Image (cartoon, rainbow, N blue to C red; front, side, top):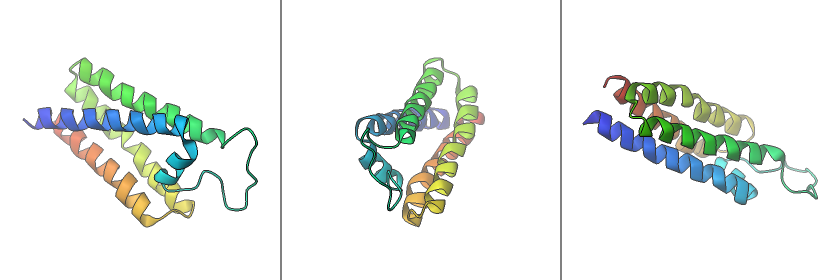
Length: 130
């Protein structure tokens, strides 16, 4: 039962992170604000070519992370999915640190990124115990 629930949670995380990645590609400045930091630092001159390239790089990274989860789900590999979810939980922890160091809110750092890491680790634990 826990394996099924953890797999569902992992799948939802996979879809969610891929959608967040798509948002970074389609509406990068809004996605950056949702991430918890502005697309451009205060006082920066707006680039004619668009937002900083890191927004697109983050979008691609998030889409790939979501696909990785779905590949592991499709192959019915709960232990491997659990190990991946544990390793991938470093990403939202790092994101929380980035938000805090960049002047973002504690709410964004802990409420968005910290909660994501905690949920991923809980799913990971359930999958690894399967």
